[in-house]
Length: 199
Image (cartoon, rainbow, N blue to C red; front, side, top):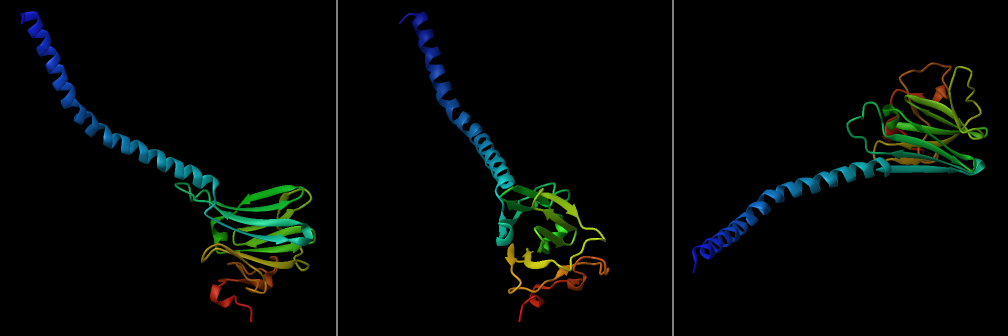
């Protein structure tokens, strides 16, 4: 065997050995990196899905208005102070009105029929949704709630659910007991779940 051939054979042999030895090194180095990439993709996918798929939903249909009031709770990560992730929607044949509720409304949010409109009362959230214009109007001192009909309340203390008047009595958690507030007779400092049963 000539020297040139021998040198060529040795170089090819060395390359084969190096390639064989480096294969496990590549696999060992790339496996944690691959797992990290897969974990990142999974977490990003779950976070994205949580922004579009509610973790809890409850609703009530109002036959007189042909409208559905829905409360949805979305997962909130990182910005939970600025956003509650709780959205109340009133869906009518004319369209949909949606509003993000405050964190304090998680305890209890009461729903009323106000003529042809929907009134919403809860700690931190008090407004009327006009079903003809789909606008949300703040409740003021001039708001007359005496003619409202209590439809029930969304309660989020043990899983989000809607309770009709025959299931739980009317109760609005409120630190303020001012007589001008809508439904002032139904306001209490604490609407304890065990004290809301209808007898």
